[in-house]
Length: 287
Ligand code: FE2
Image (spheres, rainbow, N blue to C red):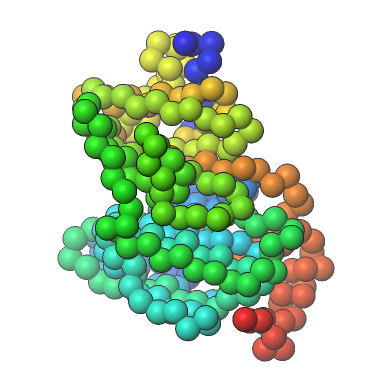
């Protein structure tokens, strides 16, 4: 079992960042330490019990060439976009937004009494889909299947498949897995990894051990941390005497050149220039 076990490649402590109109968040991909993890371009964790940390939100801004995935654990984000969509992302909901060739949107967290906790992941699009028509999948919490195993492990399946249960997010080029996994105290969870995939686990509650049980390098990871896993065989996560909750995310690398500038991620600098010109000329939104 050990020879096949998945190794932890890196454990990353998120960096404090101020983004949007003044939102304090914890960033673990798109930093000086880790620019990207193909096909993932950015990973932000917002979590605060002080509305001043998030209330200024992310007023109207553009995106091109990527997908943004917003998952709320608690709290509400109000949104609207240039496709005419508007609404609220509530506790447990997911918004999987494909910006394609161009979208303008705003994302405004609403003040809440309890702690506001959510995540945003950016997934890259391949060259052939960077200018595709924007698309938007809004998935309400009650559409996300939740598996509760006999051993008490809970898995919300947002994208990908677990125990024969498929997540509702579909037709995404990176063929992603996106799951919210809770392991009760002293419990464990293992997962078969598709060779070649990029696999990360983002620990946001409690603490766990990410490795095969008796490898000497296994170490306890306490929230908040991004754990980068290798693509060999499977990995096992175990809760300590506390519980652990983490997002398990995987995707297929694109292996394409990346040119990025703020909310635009293209293949070349010329394409970035084009995005800036389109924005200036009012031709950014095509659909
Ligand atoms: Fe955005």
